[in-house]
Length: 391
Image 1 (cartoon, rainbow, N blue to C red):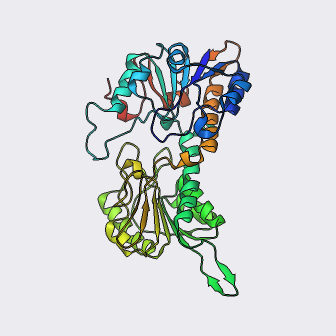
Image 2 (image 1 turned 90 degrees about the vertical axis):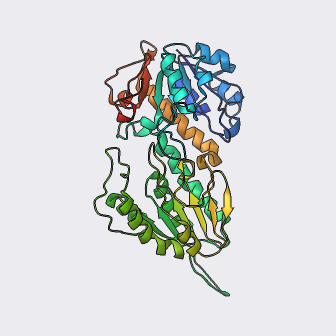
Image 3 (image 1 turned 60 degrees about the vertical axis):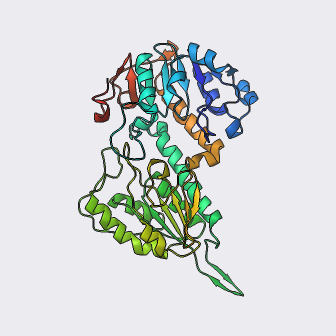
């Protein structure tokens, strides 16, 4: 069985779906492994490192047409999927919930729909890592969490590097410097890592989330929890925060406004699968913040939590607040991000690998496979309601 790792074609994507270490693991299982030359260049992995672990270089079209399993990070365009052989497996991000940033219904023709149509037309088993179940068994395959962890770290380090003051308190002969005030909105994996990083750097941290259990986690890391009475909120069965009603969002915005105004750094992480990110920090709140304050919007790619965020850019408001809207912050630490992501994929392959038959076991009732498989044998097969009307 041949596994092939495809070079990334998306702009600004520096990660890769195969690392030298994951190559060693997969070759050890008994797979033949090939990679597109230059695969790890963005993560500082050389072709020689892959070859030393038993992989062989193979050009793109050759690899796609002969591989039984193809790995990637950012979903490739539909035309590339058309070269894959029928019955092959594609494993990586597939953006199944992508919607236009303008909001509203998804148009009938989008790159995302064309990609999914290509998977169906080619009879390809499409494994979407976004759909990986959040269970104990699948934890080591959870690419969303591994990448969000790094994004939270980078967001805080980036904010610290952009700020015109230090984060820790310092007592010196010439005076005492007060610690910087950091406010983290959204206490998921990224938010928790941002809190931990800010605390290590010596900042005073306040955090907010709609879930009581998330606030308790923030407190365990040394943050002060901001509690706003929003009524019934709760979590999804996957552990994510539920979407708030318009009234609840407004209550949240009002409750956060004072903390934002007093903060040196505000970090927003609230995202919703398949929907535009909720607007949590309005222009009036940004206008109340001091000159030199930093806002990092990790939801920039899905519309942003902050009014005024520009995707992929850093903007400075009239009152001197810097809003950071860079996409894919995990790409700023591509070597570790690639290593973690490649391990997620390798763990997935290993879980379903039959060492005696030298093939992958396809049990459609396996909870991990059932949750993560989007397409198989020319049809949409995922039980998620979002795909029930696909054809």
